[in-house]
Structure formats: C-alpha cells, structure tokens
Image (tube, rainbow over all chains, first blue to last red; front, side, top):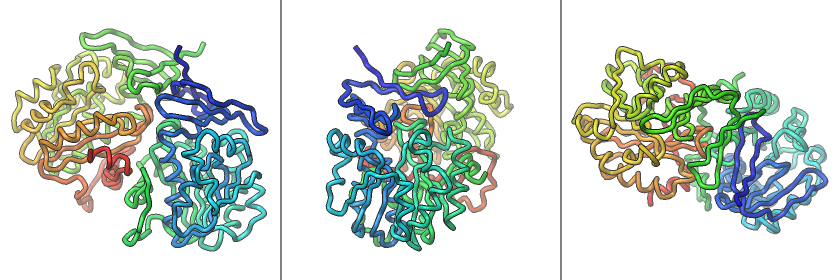
Length: 277
Length: 277
C-alpha cells in the first residue's frame, strides 16, 4: 500500500504530496499538531499543523540562507537570537560562524525542540552546544523584554496562520528593532513571492518603517509551495550587498557561498514590482 | 465537487496537484496525450502525457529564461531555431529581440501547436508573426539536415522520457553544434538539480564535449518539480557571464533583466559539485 502525505493548506488550489513510508511520531501539543514522518524522497520530515516545516533532504537550503546572509553582513556578530526555529537548524548554522559567542533560541513549543532532538539529530545537533541557550517562551514577549542586546535576530517562523500570526506584524518588527544593537540586523522568512501578493508588500512596508536598509532575497526550497522562498532583511547600518568577501575564511555549507550571498538579492522583475508596491 | 490534477510521473515519491475547474480539451495525438485544463490558481494549463508543460500564471519565467539569456549573450542573433516548444512561448520571447530576422520552430507534434493557438493565445501569439516559420518535423532529423545556419538553437523539450529522450543525447548535441554558425549558442532545458543527480552531470559532460563554454543556469519555476529549474548553455565563442549590458535598450519582460542574466549563473555549492562530477 502506498501512503502519501498531502499539504494543501497554504496556497489555495495547490497541493504538494510526498510519499510516506512510516509515521514515526504524531501528537497534539499545547500549540499545534506535530508529526515526524519517514519519506523515501526526503528522509525524515517535520510537519506542524499539517504543513511541511523541514526535511533531511533539503533543510540545508533554508537553514543556511536564513542565517549566513545576516551573519556575513554583520562585521562581528557575537549574540544572535532565533525566534521559532525549534528544529535547531538555524542554530546549527549560526554556531558555525567563528565570531558568534552566544546563540539564543526562543521557541514557544517545547515539544518541537524535544521531538527534533529525538528524531532529527542531523538538524538539531547544535542545540546542545555550550554557546546555545534555549528558552520555551513566546518570542513576541521575549523581544519586548530584551532591549539593545542582539547583533542579529532571525525570525524562523511557521506561516502567518495559527501561532505565528503575530510574528508578521508591525509591532513585533518594532520590538525586534529595539532588541537589536545599534548596528543590528533582522531577518524573517517571508513566504513565496508567487503566492503572497498581499503579504509581501505589507511585510516590506512594515520592516522598511524600522530599518534604513530593507532588502528581500530569494532561495530555492523545493518542499515549500512553489519552491521559491523569500527572506526579508532589515539592517540598521550594514548593507548585505556591499559585503567584502575578499578575506572571507568560510566554513562548510551546501548552498551558501559569497556569490550566492550577492546573487540572492537580484530579483526578477515581478518581485521588484511586488516589493515596490 | 473539487477536482484536482495530480502530476506524479517525474520524481518518484513527489507529486504536485493543482485544482481544476474544467477540462477544456483532451486527446491522444500521434505522439502523446495532450490536455488543456482550466485551473483557479494558474489559469489554463497544458499537459503532455500527464505532465505540466506550461500555464498562464508562471509561463513567463520558463519562456523568458530559455530564450533571453542566449539572445543577449550573442551580439547579433539573426536566425534562431527552437526544437520542441510547440506552445509558442519561446518564439513569443525570441521575436521581442530587435536583431532577430527569423525564428524557426520545429515541433514534432502538430496538435500541440494547433491546440496552443486555440486555447493558449497569450502564449502562442507569436506563432503568426511573419518572422516565424513552423515545421512539423522530428527536431533530431531537422538539425542533421541544416549545417552552419543558426545563431542560436534552443531545446524546449519535454522531460527525458517518451518522445524527447533523443533530445538529451550526445549525438543530438553534436548535430546542434554543426547546425550552429561559428559563434553560435545552444541552450537546453535540463531539469531540476535537486532530483536529477545522474542526468545533469551526464548532460553537462555531453554538452561540454562540443562547446568551449558550457554553463548551467537556474530559474524559479513553481509548477515544475521542486520549483528549481536548470538550463544548460553551450557556446562556441561568447561568454554569457561577460555580457556588457551598459548600452542595452531592453524590452518588456516579467522575470528577466540584465542582473538576473548574470545572477542565474551563480550556483549553490551542491549544484557546483553536481556539474563538476
């Protein structure tokens, strides 16, 4: 018998299905439904509220691209905050960067972290590093309570439905701005430009209201709807397109490199138009 | 009642579904099954042998990216050949380029052209242009019979199963090389780097055997498996990454621009590794 998982909650009229060999874990947590399935194509896959969050085959793209662009735009990132990101993938990437002294993960749902450690050790492996602090708290509240503290804040959220709605709102972006130091950098995952013609201009406008440098960049993520994913950076001082990589020592990555860092900001005409709305 | 079309023939274990409001056309041609469906998300969609070929929502990406990269790499493209591409989308883009005097379409299946003209006029509109010649022939045979004639050859083929298998083989690349003039440029669609770990290195090697300059580039195509699509260019003389756009007059495009032209050749690490195999 063939079993297929089908995701059809995000883009109306579009569905992505992945064959499943086994359901390894399924529970209703305090915040959402959480499942881990084994798939022949993508290896283990984490689902939250029936939406694909990450999987062993292509997780490197999302996790490298949400973190290394900001880490290499900032000249000396020491303290980095991740809101959400309970699978630990962004944290694993952040601690590769030689200047990072502390990486703080604030995940509302403890069960996402615990389940990822159990079933997705390749992704969650960084969470045990001595530089890493994990808090099970509401990210919105956490940033309100921490002023002028972080060099970088990454919002590794679920989609703007359910528990993550507040992470796409202007008030939250303002609090993040206050939690960043004077040359801090903010990055959020901001969905697909093919299917979010209202969300993306709104988010751009809200982030631009806080940061003199606001730029969107793209990456190829095959298991997100449409495979084209956007991230939006708000930066108080450093321009991601002006980074000088000539003395860059580098570290092991499977997607990110200095040329990709720059090329990710080059946008197709229809995306340029979308963000200038 | 909700109806969904599901494509599950290309990548084992992965399926893409699009809601369908109406089937407008369905027939078995001499070569393949051909259908046109109306979808709420993507507008009209052309299916060949149950695989998505093109659709009104995102066709601009594929058609602009298969054609304008070569057209702007060549300093004066006059005569362009398209193998396959019966929907006419590549032709529509080619004739936007001011130097083009003749665009020849060689499509094996007359019904693809006729059906596209009837149901996809937005895509097929260029086929009636006086600069355009359409031949219903086998592309492999056609290039064998034309030597030293074209500035650019574009292979706008279906996937390497069924009628298009021969369009992914070394002998065909060699014939195309002979059909090109001494500074000619060849481009083929070469599938997804996420799911074709054997095909892509093989195709690279076969194209590289014919051309001193062989380069792969990428574009975001949401309705192809994984959303990340590759094209491979073989060029006898002109380097696509060395194009000087400073005096470029341009023309209307929705994806392509001079910056995208260059950025499309910037590859993630795993793709660099794949093509150096």
